[in-house]
Length: 203
Image 1 (cartoon, rainbow, N blue to C red):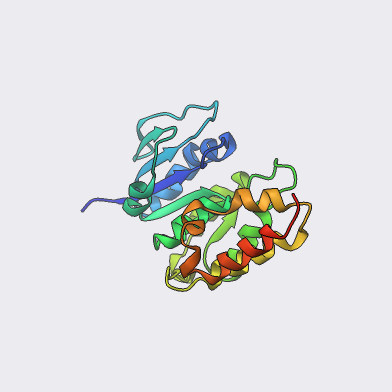
Image 2: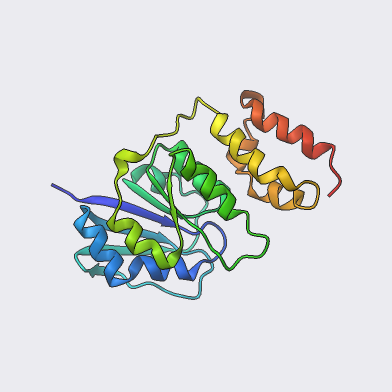
Protein backbone atom coordinates (compact mmCIF):
# COMPACT_ATOMS: atom_id res chain seq x y z
CA UNK A 1 0.00 0.00 0.00
CA UNK A 2 1.30 3.46 -0.89
CA UNK A 3 2.49 5.65 1.94
CA UNK A 4 1.10 9.01 2.95
CA UNK A 5 2.17 12.30 1.40
CA UNK A 6 3.15 15.68 2.82
CA UNK A 7 2.93 19.05 1.12
CA UNK A 8 5.25 21.74 2.47
CA UNK A 9 4.65 25.34 1.45
CA UNK A 10 6.30 28.70 2.13
CA UNK A 11 3.81 30.67 0.04
CA UNK A 12 5.12 33.36 -2.30
CA UNK A 13 8.04 34.38 -0.09
CA UNK A 14 11.02 32.42 1.24
CA UNK A 15 11.50 30.46 4.44
CA UNK A 16 14.72 28.48 4.14
CA UNK A 17 14.70 27.54 7.82
CA UNK A 18 11.44 25.64 7.32
CA UNK A 19 12.67 23.80 4.22
CA UNK A 20 15.93 22.90 5.94
CA UNK A 21 14.05 21.65 8.99
CA UNK A 22 11.80 19.42 6.88
CA UNK A 23 14.66 17.74 5.02
CA UNK A 24 16.71 17.24 8.19
CA UNK A 25 17.41 13.54 8.66
CA UNK A 26 15.67 13.49 12.03
CA UNK A 27 12.50 15.05 10.66
CA UNK A 28 12.41 12.71 7.67
CA UNK A 29 12.88 9.76 10.00
CA UNK A 30 10.01 11.01 12.17
CA UNK A 31 7.80 11.39 9.09
CA UNK A 32 8.66 7.88 7.90
CA UNK A 33 7.76 6.45 11.32
CA UNK A 34 4.39 8.19 11.03
CA UNK A 35 3.77 6.50 7.67
CA UNK A 36 4.69 9.34 5.31
CA UNK A 37 6.74 8.30 2.31
CA UNK A 38 6.51 11.33 -0.01
CA UNK A 39 7.24 15.01 0.63
CA UNK A 40 6.63 17.74 -1.94
CA UNK A 41 8.23 21.08 -1.05
CA UNK A 42 7.17 24.44 -2.47
CA UNK A 43 10.22 26.59 -1.74
CA UNK A 44 9.27 29.98 -3.20
CA UNK A 45 12.19 32.36 -3.55
CA UNK A 46 14.38 30.54 -1.05
CA UNK A 47 18.14 30.33 -1.52
CA UNK A 48 18.35 26.82 -0.10
CA UNK A 49 17.72 24.07 -2.64
CA UNK A 50 16.59 20.84 -0.97
CA UNK A 51 17.74 17.42 -2.15
CA UNK A 52 15.56 15.27 -4.36
CA UNK A 53 14.99 11.55 -4.51
CA UNK A 54 14.94 9.03 -1.67
CA UNK A 55 16.22 10.18 1.72
CA UNK A 56 15.61 8.30 4.97
CA UNK A 57 13.00 6.26 3.11
CA UNK A 58 11.09 9.37 2.02
CA UNK A 59 10.79 10.54 -1.60
CA UNK A 60 11.56 14.26 -1.88
CA UNK A 61 10.65 16.62 -4.71
CA UNK A 62 10.35 20.39 -4.93
CA UNK A 63 9.28 23.34 -7.02
CA UNK A 64 9.42 27.08 -6.52
CA UNK A 65 6.19 28.70 -7.63
CA UNK A 66 3.27 27.91 -9.90
CA UNK A 67 -0.07 29.57 -10.66
CA UNK A 68 -2.04 27.33 -8.29
CA UNK A 69 -1.12 24.84 -5.58
CA UNK A 70 -4.72 23.68 -5.09
CA UNK A 71 -3.91 20.25 -6.50
CA UNK A 72 -0.95 19.90 -4.14
CA UNK A 73 -3.16 20.69 -1.15
CA UNK A 74 -5.80 18.26 -2.41
CA UNK A 75 -3.29 15.43 -2.86
CA UNK A 76 -1.65 15.84 0.54
CA UNK A 77 -2.39 13.81 3.65
CA UNK A 78 -0.61 16.42 5.79
CA UNK A 79 0.29 20.05 5.14
CA UNK A 80 3.31 21.70 6.76
CA UNK A 81 3.05 25.40 6.05
CA UNK A 82 4.55 28.71 6.99
CA UNK A 83 2.07 30.43 9.29
CA UNK A 84 0.87 32.90 6.67
CA UNK A 85 -2.88 33.37 6.61
CA UNK A 86 -3.47 32.47 2.98
CA UNK A 87 -1.62 29.15 3.08
CA UNK A 88 -3.04 28.11 6.46
CA UNK A 89 -6.61 28.83 5.48
CA UNK A 90 -6.20 27.14 2.10
CA UNK A 91 -5.00 23.99 3.88
CA UNK A 92 -7.91 24.09 6.32
CA UNK A 93 -10.45 24.78 3.58
CA UNK A 94 -9.07 21.74 1.73
CA UNK A 95 -9.78 19.69 4.86
CA UNK A 96 -6.13 18.86 5.48
CA UNK A 97 -4.36 18.35 8.82
CA UNK A 98 -2.01 21.30 9.29
CA UNK A 99 1.26 22.01 11.03
CA UNK A 100 1.79 25.78 10.95
CA UNK A 101 5.44 26.77 11.31
CA UNK A 102 6.11 30.29 12.55
CA UNK A 103 8.92 32.33 11.04
CA UNK A 104 10.14 34.09 14.17
CA UNK A 105 12.62 36.24 12.25
CA UNK A 106 9.89 38.44 10.78
CA UNK A 107 9.30 42.01 11.96
CA UNK A 108 5.80 42.90 13.24
CA UNK A 109 5.07 39.19 13.15
CA UNK A 110 1.36 38.34 12.95
CA UNK A 111 2.17 34.69 12.32
CA UNK A 112 2.48 33.87 16.01
CA UNK A 113 -0.99 35.28 16.77
CA UNK A 114 -2.51 33.42 13.84
CA UNK A 115 -0.85 30.08 14.66
CA UNK A 116 -1.78 30.33 18.34
CA UNK A 117 -5.38 31.24 17.50
CA UNK A 118 -5.77 28.27 15.16
CA UNK A 119 -3.99 25.87 17.52
CA UNK A 120 -5.93 27.01 20.57
CA UNK A 121 -9.14 26.28 18.68
CA UNK A 122 -7.91 22.80 17.76
CA UNK A 123 -7.51 23.39 14.03
CA UNK A 124 -3.76 22.88 13.69
CA UNK A 125 -0.50 22.23 15.42
CA UNK A 126 2.06 25.01 15.45
CA UNK A 127 5.78 25.13 16.03
CA UNK A 128 9.01 26.80 14.96
CA UNK A 129 11.59 25.38 12.54
CA UNK A 130 13.78 24.25 15.43
CA UNK A 131 10.91 22.30 17.03
CA UNK A 132 9.44 20.79 13.86
CA UNK A 133 11.09 17.40 14.33
CA UNK A 134 9.69 17.08 17.84
CA UNK A 135 6.26 18.20 16.67
CA UNK A 136 6.20 15.59 13.89
CA UNK A 137 7.40 12.87 16.26
CA UNK A 138 4.52 13.61 18.65
CA UNK A 139 1.94 14.20 15.92
CA UNK A 140 -1.52 12.89 16.81
CA UNK A 141 -3.97 13.97 14.13
CA UNK A 142 -6.91 12.67 16.15
CA UNK A 143 -6.52 15.76 18.34
CA UNK A 144 -7.44 18.09 15.48
CA UNK A 145 -10.83 19.38 14.44
CA UNK A 146 -11.26 19.58 10.69
CA UNK A 147 -12.43 22.94 9.41
CA UNK A 148 -15.68 22.97 7.45
CA UNK A 149 -15.66 25.45 4.53
CA UNK A 150 -19.34 26.08 5.21
CA UNK A 151 -18.55 27.57 8.62
CA UNK A 152 -16.81 30.95 8.30
CA UNK A 153 -16.48 31.55 12.05
CA UNK A 154 -12.86 30.34 12.10
CA UNK A 155 -11.96 32.91 9.46
CA UNK A 156 -13.78 35.61 11.43
CA UNK A 157 -12.00 34.74 14.69
CA UNK A 158 -8.62 34.75 13.04
CA UNK A 159 -9.22 38.04 11.24
CA UNK A 160 -10.39 39.62 14.47
CA UNK A 161 -7.11 38.62 16.12
CA UNK A 162 -5.07 40.07 13.24
CA UNK A 163 -6.83 43.43 12.97
CA UNK A 164 -6.82 44.30 16.66
CA UNK A 165 -3.98 46.72 16.03
CA UNK A 166 -5.77 48.85 13.39
CA UNK A 167 -4.98 51.29 11.92
CA UNK A 168 -1.19 50.88 12.07
CA UNK A 169 -1.18 47.31 10.86
CA UNK A 170 -4.01 47.60 8.34
CA UNK A 171 -1.67 47.02 5.41
CA UNK A 172 -0.34 43.83 7.00
CA UNK A 173 -3.86 42.59 7.63
CA UNK A 174 -4.87 43.28 4.03
CA UNK A 175 -1.81 41.43 2.76
CA UNK A 176 -2.64 38.41 4.90
CA UNK A 177 -6.19 37.90 3.64
CA UNK A 178 -6.34 35.00 1.17
CA UNK A 179 -7.54 36.04 -2.26
CA UNK A 180 -9.96 33.14 -2.34
CA UNK A 181 -11.73 34.47 0.72
CA UNK A 182 -11.86 38.02 -0.61
CA UNK A 183 -13.47 36.77 -3.83
CA UNK A 184 -16.39 35.32 -1.87
CA UNK A 185 -17.37 38.27 0.30
CA UNK A 186 -21.05 37.91 -0.55
CA UNK A 187 -21.19 34.44 1.00
CA UNK A 188 -18.86 35.13 3.91
CA UNK A 189 -20.19 37.78 6.31
CA UNK A 190 -16.97 37.92 8.30
CA UNK A 191 -14.96 38.95 5.23
CA UNK A 192 -17.63 41.46 4.24
CA UNK A 193 -17.37 42.97 7.71
CA UNK A 194 -13.60 43.20 7.42
CA UNK A 195 -13.91 44.81 3.99
CA UNK A 196 -16.21 47.46 5.49
CA UNK A 197 -13.66 48.18 8.22
CA UNK A 198 -10.85 48.47 5.71
CA UNK A 199 -12.87 50.85 3.55
CA UNK A 200 -13.24 53.20 6.52
CA UNK A 201 -9.61 53.01 7.60
CA UNK A 202 -6.80 55.20 6.33
CA UNK A 203 -3.68 53.24 5.44
